[in-house]
Image (tube, rainbow, N blue to C red; front, side, top):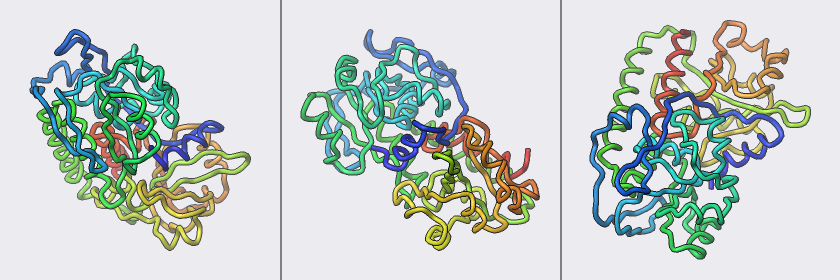
Length: 350
């Protein structure tokens, strides 16, 4: 399951963890069979793309071949990115892990009110899962033999689609691949092609909008954080992080390097998510870099009290800016568009 985000979720049990988002609502309407929920955001209400029929054979994120008798209609989802993706595809999940947490941190797509709560993302409630009567279970894993996959396949005859939630070598490409894979399993590839084309155009328009921005430096680091005991923990997004990739696409230069992490980091950078960990002093290592951060949670109160923080060049020059609440840092194309918009706003200081 999600490794880097799981660490953050553990911290959030004590404090506030910081991934972010803002978005469009969904309800459910009937589509296909009488019991097949369909997401009904405004985009889905106006959607005219086709849903395929007939058997499906696909290769999942870890190379396993899957065969479905027909496109999945009743999907249960154990991770938030994939839940968002399903709803963007106009397929409302019947069950999701930690819907309350999803509603707190992800708003690109709103879960149906009657979605079944599967408990935590790390340890789903299997009775609730099977009771939701899914025809496909979507999980996230980095190895096909991950414990959750083995458990589900041993205890149920429901097909399990494994996705890989992050790839530091191509974070944006991986985001698209996960989205397309879920589309393939649900017969919604025509809708996926449209959404991804819209995302690409959105990013291209954003590049054009910021092309003439006159920044003192293009160096930047995005970070979030939390309070652990009496200590403020800072989590810089290094190269390989999805947010860092968005910033890079818009002409910015990542400032959190391996050398800085070796000197100031607490452990290595997560190899899949590109996330590091440091303290407030670690931000001094990025010099004049622009500082962008999540404002979710009370940890920012401690940040702004710090004399180290107020002495940083970006803070003194008005180049330290919070993203709006609600831009999820590990989401799908709609969260991605929100993140791009947030970058445009801080670059242009709107």
